[in-house]
Length: 390
Image 1 (cartoon, helix red, strand yellow):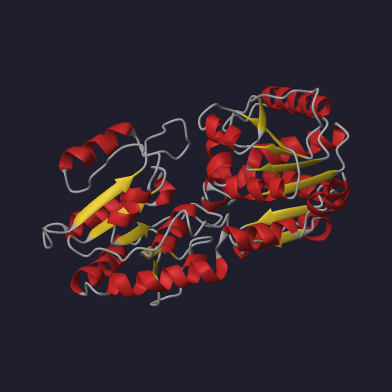
Image 2 (cartoon, rainbow, N blue to C red):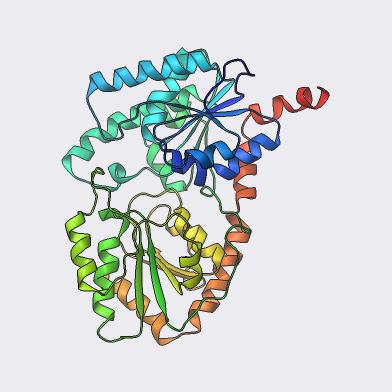
């Protein structure tokens, strides 16, 4: 379902980082906007999950996005392409999320004549989690770009307070950007219903992209420590290799893990719910600078205890000793020790899993997060009376 300029101009245009995230992570928010009578459109860089996006009633158009290029000429070309597309589509409002859509899309939208714009960052990512020379050189430039886009926008949404504190170290961002922290992307309680955690066998689940900073290597190392002493325990890692990403785990390393036979690797899984129901405990030792990891929220909604890192975004999901534990980034011994506690105390996974579900119900539902965001967006309110009179 591509754009048809003969129909009403879109009320709101999403500039998406990838089509899957638009369907999976923004889907409930799109539905909330459409329930208010708004026409929703999106610029997307790929075709994966395109059918799911169209099923939400979203019209789409392709644009070119290279997430990792740094060449000035290429970025200027993409900026001009976005300005041309946005001017042609003529939306009433624009919402951009992820780094490139924010730093290119928001200024392009302003030059295309859009006055109501919003930014959403779903975590600051590897660039803000690393201390190497390249990252230290690039961060000030990205900070300046975030401040520019934030100053042009009505609201800059972030998903954890650490990210806002990081960006507010820039005086331009602090004084010229209206920023609001929301509790991640939220999770639909009906889509991820509660079930009692199985304990026979006890199964630890990792679920995320196979990136160094996501903690997959630490998960495998902890499994190595535990497996010889607990032969009945299972370890499963859901995700896939994407060597186009800067900090990706190599296909060769994952192949070696698979051959080792300690951790199972089912490959790319489109629907994770069966694996969540079969899991006892969710383990995500990530120090990636997450927003709030959706995988943790999905596991918690299903009723699973969690072990994750004491790092931005991840720490928001854990009440220490109540629904899980936090470990220091990169500390394999601490991670293995916490995992072993669940092995030795089999009832703990169920008790903490119940607490996880209660925490999601109190703070992390899509209904709560959507209400936070809609309350900040003029477009979500201004057209309602007019549409109701039609």
